[in-house]
Each structure stands twice: as structure tokens, then as C-alpha cells.
Amino acid sequence: MFDQSSDTGSAATAPSGVVSELLVGMRLVGINYRRIQISPPFGLNFGGDEGGARLHFVARGSVFLRRPGADDLALDAGAAVLLPHGGAHDLVSRPNQPSRAVTSFDSAPLCRTVDDINACIEGACHGNDTVIFSGCMQFELGSMHALVALMPEVISADTLLDRYPEILPMLEAMERETRNERAGFAGILARLAEVVSAFIVRAWVECGCGAATGWAAALRDPRLARVIAAMHRDPGRSWTVRDLAAEMGASRSVFAERFLAVTGMTPLRYLTELRMRLATQWIARDRVSIDDAAHRLGYGSQAAFSRAFKRVIGCAPGTLRSGAETAREP
Image (cartoon, rainbow, N blue to C red; front, side, top):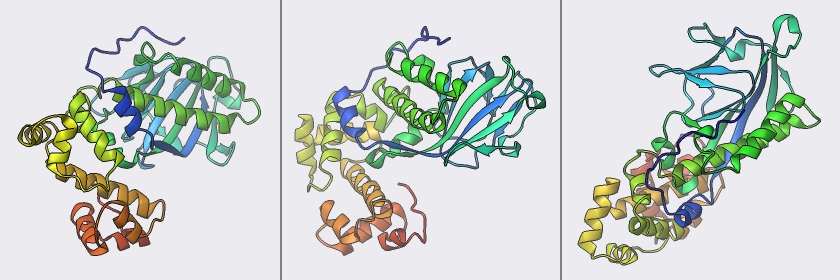
């Protein structure tokens, strides 16, 4: 049922302590979920207009994941895939099957965030029907928001099972909850989907972020990873290049050259962008005052903080706080 034979790859992994420290603030917030029971042949189109990441879990039957410009990906019962960027795609019962928007199917609420779609033939459920649980989620990664842009279009859970066998019981629990429909199953499924997605993200980072370069490559370098962790741990400190070089155990020139070559930016530029990503989260989500955010991030005045914020984010912090403008991510 669950394929555990997939190769996890031999890419260098990121130091686990650094990953744990950087991922401590990671959260995935469910936007909406659907439990879908449908008779083949079928084609479900997910237009990507809902935003956020998309997790698909196949509880029964088999489907093909179809994306523009990519080969179809076969998903058997027990398979889970995360599409970190969302985007338009189809789930179809066979290649070349036409699809229709999943939002065009009649649905009924199972709980506050989970809808049920029953598209079985003549409304009667049969053993050969396909059962899918699909979730749309928003990443909240705090200081690691840059991670999302580095992720591949699709991350499959079955490629991680050899290295992370603890994912398997969660997938099996999702299968039971999806198929058996016990009391409260919809809410339990939503929470399990968030946990499985978080495991997939963490596993991808710990496995070295695939072939991603720049910031992810820095995490694969133990000495640079120590520097990055130090900045994330204490972003309000008045860091100098000398201080950061000492964290790496290198001269200022060697450190600065290495950091720029791997990440594509200077250490102090990285620090500024880190601070502004944190400030965006604190001000917009946590309702921290602008003055408090400036103080926590080491700025001597609100004016200096506001200038840096507008330079990096593209709007004044007061505008972001009022919700009148969406911040432009650095």
C-alpha cells in the first residue's frame, strides 16, 4: 500500500541542530479542505486561485497528478504529495482525461473548514470509487519565509519514508479517518494534514533542500549554518562582519567572500532582510507596535527602522499595520 522503496537521494544534509532551531517557528494554517469520493473516470481541476500550498492524499483508488509542462505523476492508495507553490493542476483517473473545476461539484460542510464532495455514480458509493483528501494551506515560516521560494513544485511523501518512517503511521491514520468517517473525522484529518505537510517540509530541508542553491546551500555548510543560526537566534544584536566571521571561525575577508558566493548577498544585507521579514510577521500578524518591533530588532529609533523597512519591504510599517497594502516580500 505504501511504497517505502524510493531513493531518498545522497545530497548532503543540513546540520540537524540548525534546522531544528530555524524551523521552531514553522506553522501551517489550513485554509480549506475537501474530502472527495468520486467514481472513475473523472478529472478534477485545481485552478490555483485559492492560494497557498496544496496537499493531496489518496485514501483509496489511484490517480494521476497532471501539471502544465510536466510528466504525469501516478499516485496510488496511501500516496501523499505536497505542492508548496499550489498553482493550477489536475487529479485525473487516467491520462488525457478531461477535467472540470473541483469548485463546480456540489459539496456539503463536514465541519468549519472541511467540505464533502460526493460525485459517485448515481449518488451511490461503491468499492471501486476513489477517495481523496485535499487541503489548501498557508505556510507561516517567520524568518525562514525565503524557504518557500526554493522548494520544488512537488514533494512526494513516499520518497521520504526510508529516512523518516514516522510519517507512515500518520498516513495510515489519514487513510483510516478518510475511509471510515468516524465521529469527528473531518477535524482530525485537517490536523493530520497539517502535521504531515510540516514533516514533508522539514524532511526536505534536512535532506539538503534537493538541488537548491543560495540560502539552502549555506545550510549545507556547517560553518555558514552556524552563522545563519546565530543571526536568526539574535536578530536584534548589533552584528558586525567581524562578529559573524568569529562565529564561522574565519577571517573577515574569507567569511564575507564565502557568504556572498554561497548566498548571493552580503552578510549585513542578509541580516537586514531577516529583520524585515520578522518585522512583517510581528506587525501584521502579531500586532506588535512599530516602536516595539524597532527596539527588538536593534534599531535606535523608529525613523531608522521605518526607512530600512520601506527600503526592503516596499511600504511603510504603518501602512502594513493598517492592512491597507500587502507587503512585498524581499
